[in-house]
Length: 273
Image (cartoon, rainbow, N blue to C red):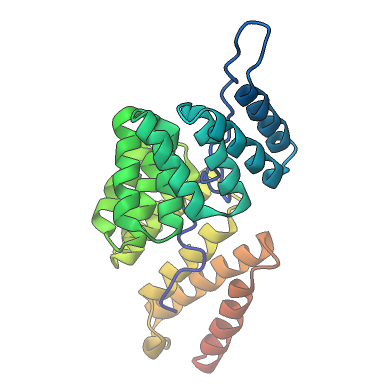
C-alpha cells in the first residue's frame, strides 16, 4: 500500500474539516445618513440573499451594486464570496483581483484568492497569494496551513514541512497541523517522523479515524510481506492491522480501512508459522 488514504485533506479548524471555506464575513454597507443610495440598496439586498444562502440572487444584487459604484471594494468582495459559494470559481478569481486592485492590503481577498487558486491547481499563483496574505497578517495560522497545503500539492515537501511547523508553533494543539506534517514526512519516506506526528494528531483528537488509518500504513511500510515469517515484520503488520481496525471502528464507512484489513489478514494468514 503506497499511498495514504485521505492523507492530505488540507488545513482544518478541527480534526476533519477544512479551513478553506470563503471568508464570507460581510462588511457593513456604507450608508449616507438616513438615506441609502441605489448602490447601497442593491448591496443590502445581496447581503440578505447571501445570508439566506440564495447565492444567485446575491450575485445579481452585488453585480448591480458594482455597476452603480465600481469603486467600492466591499461590493466586489461580497460578489466574489457569492460566486465562490456558487462554485463559479473563475469569476470569483476575477472579482477578488478587482478587490485587490482597489485595495491592495485586503487580507481576506488575498487569502480567498489563494484558496481558489489552490483548488484550481494553480499552485505558483496560490503560493504568491497566500504569501501576500501573510505579509499583511503574519499570524494567520489558516494562511500558513493553506500555504503548506499548496506546497504539498505541488510536491514541494520541504517547504510544506516548514509551513506546518510554523503552524504548530502558532497553535500547538492544532490537530491538522500535526496530521498534515505527518503526511509530508510520509511523502518524504521519513516513516519515523510521520508516525510521531500521526500519533500526536491522535493524542490531540483520539477519535480521528484518518490518523489511525495512516499510522497503520506507516507500520505496514516498516514491515515486509516477503519477511512475514520473521517476528519483526509480522509485528509491524499486526500493529498496522490494529490501527486499521481502530480506524474502521471509528468510521464504519471507511472503505479503505475495510479493504486494508481484509488484505492484511490474508497476508498474515498465508504466512502463519
